[in-house]
Image 1 (tube, helix red, strand yellow):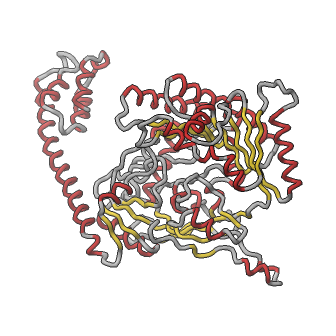
Image 2 (cartoon, rainbow, N blue to C red; image 1 turned 180 degrees about the vertical axis):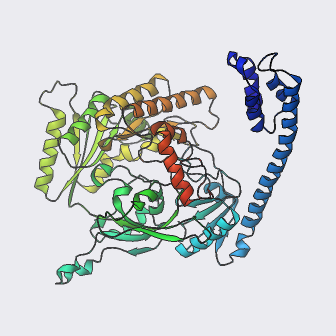
Image 3 (tube, rainbow, N blue to C red; image 1 turned 90 degrees about the horizontal axis):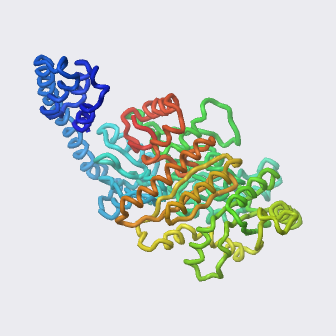
Length: 567
């Protein structure tokens, strides 16, 4: 890059005042500069600068720094070789641990559910306990081996991509699947008033949300955070601060965790820390629970989590209705929230989403208009019916000819009927892929979140941008919390023109979002692809604060390096 930069600088009028100190700086940081380019630096300032002395100075600096660069490269090569030897020797160093270098497993552990290509680790270790993770981290700290914790691999921002050579993937999902405690219902039969069961569960980081809810099925409790992927692990959901369709009622992962056990890479001892308490609130010290939640594996390896549980509602109803415009549908959601309607789920699909579902499903086609999918719950049937009546009254209005009013209401109370009614939402991702034949490698999935008052405007502008650029893909959102996505299918050999359109949509979406006080990611995280947007969202001082935290908790930059912030 420096060689190309010099060519550009030679034609720059600004360089008429170029001084020897600047030439020194450029050559100082360009040890591999070609001699011809070094001579070019001497001519940048015109005849007064192009002296023999300066030219000789540049040549001497080039020769000296080229030598330094070779030594630096040699040191770096030695480090990589040392890492390679150390990671290769791990199976013999830890004969009691389970390792894998199976090519298929390596490829899988280097890729999540995003469109990014796999960047596989060098080796995988399947740990069985927090103590085994600690032993592994101690060894990696001693030998400077990069580490990436791995759950189910369902994240959407290339969180598990191994950006550095000789990276170790620490898999928690294969063996760390113990559910240590759930509510003790036998306490309810005791006369002791202090025997009320706590609505919480203590689980290993590798436990999936589906596994937990299966165990809880007969308890009357449920784990409510629903990112869509049933196999998503609790540890991974904490690491990405996951959320989903139920956020409007129950909150994100941050609001549903009480304790975290994690292994740090702060030193050779790789300390095990436990943060949080089982109390429902605490003001004790810094909020380390929130710090680790959303850290994307860059600050610690989460091995055990205490999560909040919620009662399974006794009466549930699902509703759908459609609108003549996306703006009207989004405005309707904001109105429901303003009225204080206690929604369980609130999803908004644009007309492209409905068309994609109709084309991929054998069910009766739905009207190809922006559609709301709602779910309500209550303790009694009467209370539930009152909510349904109020929702219909708010969204339908009093004027039948109102072009902002909801139409074509469908209501279901039985579980199977509710699932059928929500089929278009649950199958949207794969329906979107089928809408563009050949999109076998997946799709670019955007993730932005705006204040509710801005949702209608930003979502409408984004959908218009997608359609106007001729890009295939639906727009939809967890409308109750202002979070929305675009699913933009891509081909294996996508041409640059189409990629340019997709990138333009992403850029425009993020700029609209930030302009109204939103965030570049509502639930997927930063990974490495959104670091540039993070810098736009926050000031340089805020980014520096994040770097200070990263350096303090990971001084060697070994935990998922290259993600969130660069240090």
